Image 1 (cartoon, rainbow, N blue to C red):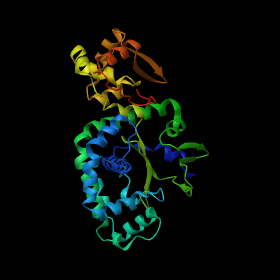
Image 2: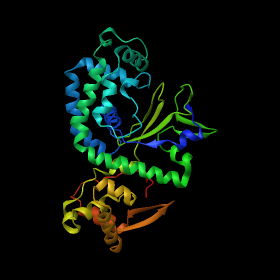
Image 3: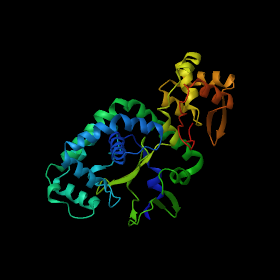
Image 4: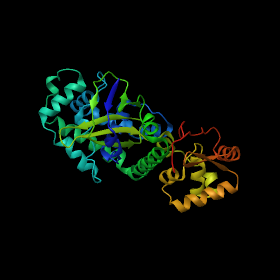
Length: 342
């Protein structure tokens, strides 16, 4: 298994950051995989996968470079594709992308050989390899991520708030254990980051960054030497990542109003007020009023989880939502695991 040695000071100074580049890279991985983990991802793939595949068919060199960078044989993503967030400020997508585009060719070859698992074919040892990868990332950003970036950013920020709340009452062990599959706190300063047989790394004294993304994807990245930055990219909690695309029946909108109906549909999975604000784009006051009305009507209930309050539909609320759906329309499940929130 791969693990990092992390001292207390490094953990204490760790911070959550929003990365448009990491979100785009996660979307590239999802497009390459071509399989969704929840209905919201499936709807996104249905919209964008055919065009993405046509684009790659027209550019087989870039397609081959991407296959090498994604490490299908080695399970190692090329460092070229995953430069960590600067760790300070709020860089734009294009500011982050510059780190990919300006990668020296020789370094790009070395990164790609690691992820490819051997010497690169001659046709892939190209001086324009970094620019081609950057152009592909820019295409995915412009065509599939940027149009929805405001909502995605709200979800990412809500997950960071939820993790901070979890940290306050469960400590780092509880917060880290469910970030990524195979990731857990081992004790004695050791953080298992995956289940693969990678050599351990001492990251004590480095800048440790936690980067949520909405696709169900995760990886780690680092930049050395000074300033040392280590990033853990992890998927937002299932309810946040999956609930955004849940459809609202038209009949329910007419009965309750669009804002209130949206809240009721989302509460198929327990969610906090913070998470509902992120998913709906409504203000905290509006969400609070909707929750009070729905609670007074006994369509939703609430329960405490640590310091968080989670709201969820009652049986009456379920019956109302299901009854308002058109015949034969499937229910949309936001996710299986309630995420912590505040």
